[in-house]
Length: 430
Image (cartoon, rainbow, N blue to C red):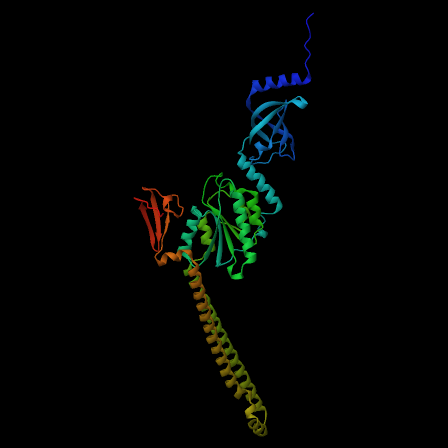
């Protein structure tokens, strides 16, 4: 009689594990998520199913931390991993290393999910959006210090109204840590305003970067950035460099500009337009005073005519004794008094006109003085004194000679224009 081989439960479970793992290795599996549970440890447990079968699945925290979209029951997904056996329960399962939604990109799905969530909370509500101030003195800028957005905004500033004061909070605009830096910069500007003098406070903030792919722009689709913009007490213009697609930051901001240049044009008026507007307002004010004076003169003349007719009528109705009495009261005759009051009114009108003209000239002088003070703060005005700024081929400011090699192309900005050069020799101090 052949001897029986009796397995222990752990032995046969271990053998099954070896057979399954060696047979299947790494596999791609598609299915629908059901019974999804997110464990406090960060692990995801759920099942994948189709019309006739069910497969247990697990996605450990180390694998799902980079998952862009939120997992929900009913989602159809494609998973990559390996078949394993959880020995304590004798259960085979798919251990997932990466996952993508079926039929739509993971980034697009994540974007739609976050849009729906924030819209439900009211972060896109037009009633929450604030008016962008006209002619702000201090403008906060959250972008890369070496990126295209900063260059574009400075060009517009130089061309339109170079007396505005730009305060840059340089951040990474893509990659690891970008979303945290952008959100922190927005919060830092608000903290600065709570501690600064009124004349030093940031009046409007531009948050953005140059164009790129959806992956490049993704930091502006992150929830932490959206909430920082929504909670900002400073009005925010979103200026992410893309024409057609909108980021979450665009939807939350008080105003969306298609590009950083467009944002600068919306917030910084041309000095010529301001001068023209001031002239128009001055002319309207003077015309209003003149119109008031003419109207007052006509009303007074009409009143004099009516009194004259009334006195003449009384004269006809009364006898000579009344005439004698009227002569005694001649000094109190309102008709005789009116010319003197008319002259006083015209004198007052002239004084009002002179005072208004004087006040306007004082305001114009204050405006020019204020523009001069802002001009002194303008970082571009240092070029007027013979200095220059040199950029490398990557657009970054050159601070040390050792960062440039012979043969490299450089761009030097001077007071009026730019100079493009090729480096032939590099000398370092020390």
